[in-house]
Length: 184
Image (cartoon, rainbow, N blue to C red; front, side, top):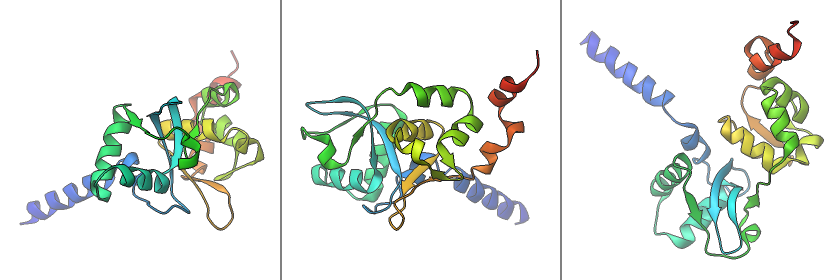
């Protein structure tokens, strides 16, 4: 009996921990405040990386598919995890809520310098600062690669990273930061 309970608790705990980043990001359906999703899209006028709030993506998906939240989440997880394209039949992707992600050398440089430098430059705590707003699509893309969600707060308008930023600002955990200060 004891071992059965222990195995059940382990399974529940593993399942809870296995709630993937994609499931977390795809679980909010509000159009006012939901996490941004980064994915490849294909429309008549654009093929490439784009970001969109999950609530808007869910509404768009529902217009073209007979679905529910579970089918939507499963389909999106597959598209994201396999880097497949999400087909957008409309011409103007910005009217739906998609934002193109262009190559941004500034964001790439800070991302390559490590999480400490990246967060220190573009964020004040968990909040994206003014410098970060200039590079919002590329920053959101990098955060998505790091499995960090970001959303716009519906009350303040601030873009807030869904993470404990302190763990990224702990220089002992950031090898790239050590490489910058190491005396050779």
